[in-house]
Image (cartoon, rainbow, N blue to C red):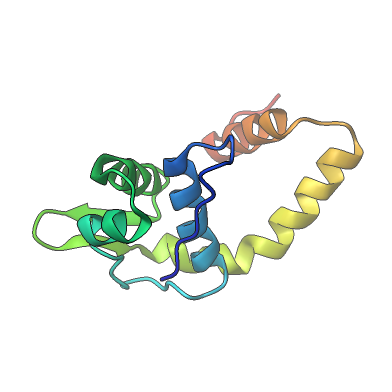
Length: 120
């Protein structure tokens, strides 16, 4: 697992860490059942605060991509395997939404509503 961050970016470090791990899942580098690097080790390697990495892992947990258990660490869930299958469809949908002038936040809201079964 190779996590890259850009300290000069406006994107918060925890979002960059989560995004890098998510991208590795899309690429198939992290598969369901794979253990993520221990938060302490990753924080030391990236030279960031431990809580920054823990926040990234919690974000991935909240997204259903990682299961976190005491003593076992962070483990990729079956949902992580589905990311690579959905990637091309997500890219196509994103491009179509941008072409229509839709903001990423609006698209995300529509997707959330669709997942919840709400219609608009």
